[in-house]
Image (cartoon, rainbow, N blue to C red; front, side):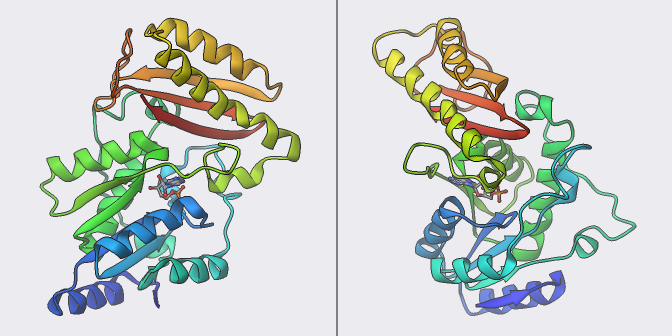
Length: 279
Ligand code: AMP
């Protein structure tokens, strides 16, 4: 597996692969890899001939007071895991090479980004779109892989690819969970043992809603109220939002139907967790 830190050397590598007829798969990550990330790398390895995993804690997608400085990092371990999962190259750029001092172009999606995480993390999705477009330019991927764990992000990237005519297929992959249902996340490492137990309320609330939906409860208000009660059972939990939405537009719905999604953002102590489920 090759390691690249500069965009120019990676781009030369990519062009050589393309000339050899290879299809490029890209898996953008912020590192501290877990089985969720590895599932994307494995899928890319099945679909394409040359898998690039980027590891970059993107400063411009963090707001003031967020966890940029504290974000967990372990590059040596990440490289080993990426290689075992099927990566052919890792791209680990410096912040300076991604954003030189005179950097001035940003990409903003204006519809899907308005609500939910976009509302609570101002500027976050502009940071995400900008870094992903930059990674697409350097890696020229045929396919790029994103997790449904961050469904709003994944749909925004898909829309960016459509609206900007980017020649990349954006592949959405299933959410990978711990054995007890907690969605895997690099941020789970912040949780104390008691918070780790409290964090189970996210998945409990989502599965409760699915069970009630299957019983014939379709009212978003009713289900949101019940999920609220499930989450309140955890003393360290503070709800940021619970949203019943259309699965494609992420606009709120009053009546749930198959294909809708329920989205959650909850703080467990100081750790912000998100999760969602498709009905
Ligand atoms: P991150 O390193 O958190 O920015 O995530 C990098 C990619 O991995 C994103 O496309 C995420 O949606 C995806 N991802 C993170 N956690 C999971 C998970 N539990 N299951 C599936 N994909 C995930």
